[in-house]
Length: 117
Image (cartoon, rainbow, N blue to C red; front, side):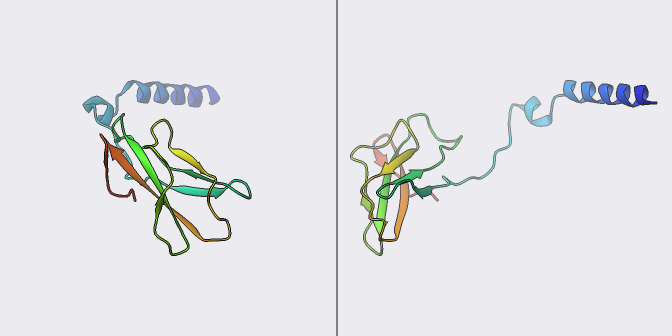
């Protein structure tokens, strides 16, 4: 009995693996509608780690500007030049006694785009 069950399971697995899915056969794939997923974590007493997602639909040459607003103040850009090599930043100038909020804006071919959700 065990042999029949194992044999049936093996045949089912091999059959399923050999049939291409509809998405793979058509060359398309399913993606989730994700935001940048911006996070800010206090990493030390004097710094905040800020990270965000690079989306699958982003062009290869996309860069980013990062802004911080302390308390109810106006957002200030934290990077001197657009961030290109990574999707994170360590903010060593944040005042931990204030409520800080962060916004990341994509920069494509030198033009800053709207803030990412």
